[in-house]
Length: 114
Length: 112
Image 1 (cartoon, each protein chain N blue to C red):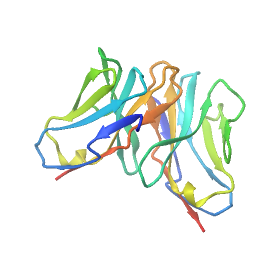
Image 2: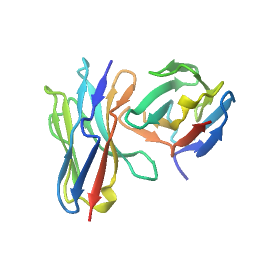
Image 3: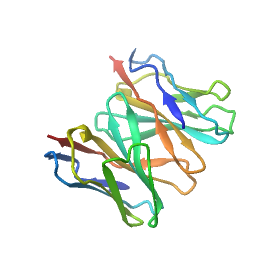
Image 4: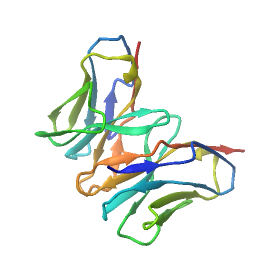
């Protein structure tokens, strides 16, 4: 079974600074997707960024980027120029290609301080 | 309108009652899912369905059942609710290329 571990239950960062959220996973699959989802207080699940395991290049979406280390099974999220609106719970998720089975980490609660 | 709609958004029910959570989607996707979210545990898969005739158990299906009434509708039932089923429940659907899941707004269920 796949497991996803987020070792930082809570983090905080000053507005405009950079923060990195950690995620590791365990799988025997060779092809899969990795995701970071944001859950603000509205509780909506919002896709932040995704990475395809067969692509070596790290995904980026504006201020959000990932550091994907396939051999180490690590998938960290870097948020640059943090904004107050980035305050949310962040979930790392793994999806097998074969059956869409998506597994989530326990989440990291990020607080951006003014 | 939201792509994935869950009803109700919030519900309080008593132990032993039967309750149904409903989900509908306008994405036209075949694949639909039910997850529950608990503090410190993230989201865990309860059931998933790849089409109307294909329903599968997830990690934590005990105490739950589902019905896929149509491509667009997937409901979750608690036959006899118990307090440890108090949680935030999410319905989701995934795109044909299996690269993204779209979530509903969540249903906060409290069993007293």
